[in-house]
Amino acid sequence: MNDYIVRATAADGHIRAFAITSRDTVEEARQDHGTSPVITAALGRLLSGAAMMGAMMKGEKDLLTVQVQCSGPAQGLTVTADANGHVKGFPRVPVVDLPLNEQGKLDVGGALGLGVLSVIKDMGLKEPYVGQIALQTGEIAEDLTYYFATSEQVPSAVGLGVLVNPDGSVRQAGGFIIQLMPFTPDEVVDALEKKITEIASVTEMLEAGKTPERILEEILDGFGLEINDTMEAGFCCDCSKERVSRAIATLSRKDLNDIINDGEGIEVKCQFCNKAYHFDIDELKEMRK
Ligand SMILES: [Zn+2]
Image (cartoon, rainbow, N blue to C red; front, side, top):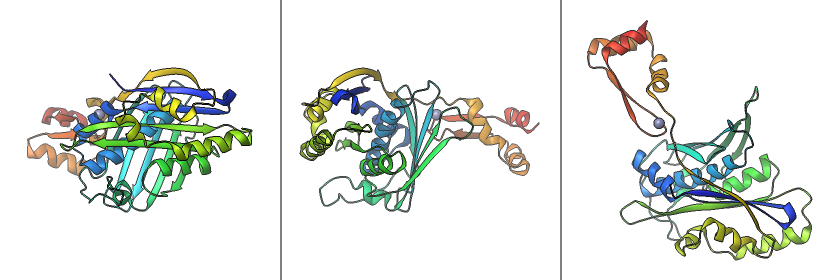
């Protein structure tokens, strides 16, 4: 596995920072779901962002879900991350074809259009934490920045990038999240804001061969950057036949009878990784009981 997340701090702990390289993760998502380039970019950015947000959680069993529901042709995206670098996700519509935007980039904002981004954190409490914002640009990084500012009251800079090869495979993917802790001195805030406007885009940095550590150095050079740890990241689905069978259990008795009477069994696919599970007639009859 080549993908990993770096956790760091700077400015005597006033700044915390995360960066990820996620090419293999996004490529796996692309292959599982057969996504077109603009959806590869949209899903890839969300997977990369969610993996870092997962790494912010404290508990081993904490789960984070980021969901986009939107009116553009993509319709929506769902991504789940744990605290250990594992992410999985799926698009509502895997194939959307749009012309490049004015900057000559994949038009992720156009694919998403207007909509809502929800962050659901299940930290083992009675009720999960839910934060919700209206999509700002639909480009994902700006939307997550807005989410952090309004729902979590944490000023943040988020950069995410996915570069797709001419054959549709993923060439580069990665990103960073820089956050300001409370009571950060104004001069640190001002200097960081200035720096953020000067840096190259994430895909440019990745194309230049920069690792997550080097990306953070690029941004936080001069702020006393301290790399705290790194952890492997990857697309990881924990589906099983038993888990998928719960979808069949939600069918009405009539529908289940119809399937059994057809005599061919059914195939049920995991939403997150598209793996197909086959259920034969005997298994369906057993479930009918
Ligand atoms: Zn799965």
